[in-house]
Length: 305
Figure: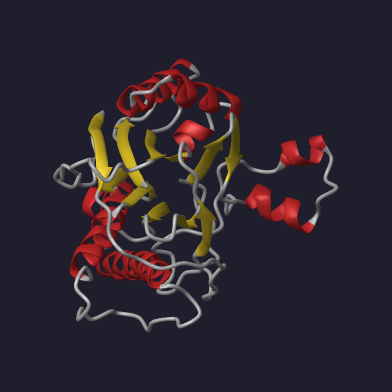
């Protein structure tokens, strides 16, 4: 099987500049969305550093003799190790940059990344913060990630909270992000893919403006992935566009042996205004399996992305 993807980011209707970034790394079958936070334009810097750092790490480790900045976890597959290490490396680089610059102090970013393994028919997903990954299968949508937010943490500890008590909790406060400390806990999982599966990676500017059922309807109706991204952005803006909005849509397809794969240049992280990527075929390449959350000491400073 192969993964075909497109992405789009937009400033929204109420923000002056775009602090979201995304990347579609076709040759590595890697898809990443980051949503920055911080002082004046520091969110731009953090999210852009996240997508660029992860992309550069994947390019640098494409060869077997590459040096890794963190130890290889033998409990995990190579793909999981690459995704986990890429996110941890981005976290460390953002943290070190923030403590060297007064203007960038306190900057951070959420991140959600998906790595497709065609040989294992798995999608590996790693995330920190409240940027989300959804999977659409058999006409149903499932949220694959759990928001690292104050609301969710309260619900985990006190699942019997009333609607009134939930309403009193501050919204859009995240409890985990890249750049808060020199180490970060990354939630990591693997998903067995099927032909026809669609994965949607997005910032909370999309998920906060649209119901899951609306996202489902768009990706089922729009065959063209670029159009699907554009429609999701448009609808989020129609619902208020309160934040920057980013969507990357990935579809899993049967790869005919007679098909010649056309390599499209990798798409770098994007910032201001609206920027989009045409659908990209992620080239087939050998890889391995697994799944499991991976623990490292988590940052505790709440922030808003």
